[in-house]
Image (cartoon, rainbow, N blue to C red; front, side, top):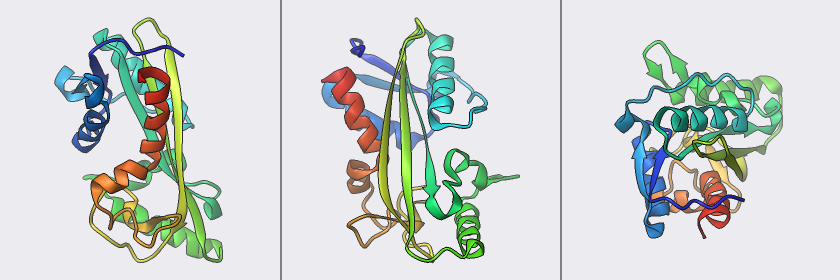
Length: 202
């Protein structure tokens, strides 16, 4: 396992909320976070059919373009009754001509569940894969998961993506109803980050 020894880390993302979350997690380690937009990086095409494949594309493209160590993630919602869909295509389900519409994506997921005839509970999991890549081509991979179930109708206006239809195991609120920072401490990304910190920073 390679340790991270620098004080500057490029996060291969244009999502400001994600950058703030990562900065909060790595702040105690004295690591400064910069986003892809600060370096003028475009988002590379995600052509793989797995979370790790797409995370590797983003991390290695960013480190190659800048010469900085780069961290990327790929994440999504896998619904058991739909054979793991939308999974790696979670963002694709939200694409429209005018940008991403996750209400549309959540409605599509609900319609697919009804069409499947699957009985409740509609079990599901959020998955996150982190890839930390260095300019010499080396990388480390960390995967996180949180299990729960799908509910309908949508509940809550916090979070993002499919959060308003996902209730994590042991809770009554959806991710969309939870305080953002409380969710961040227990999420699939938090699980992956705990492994990243233990492997490369602690």
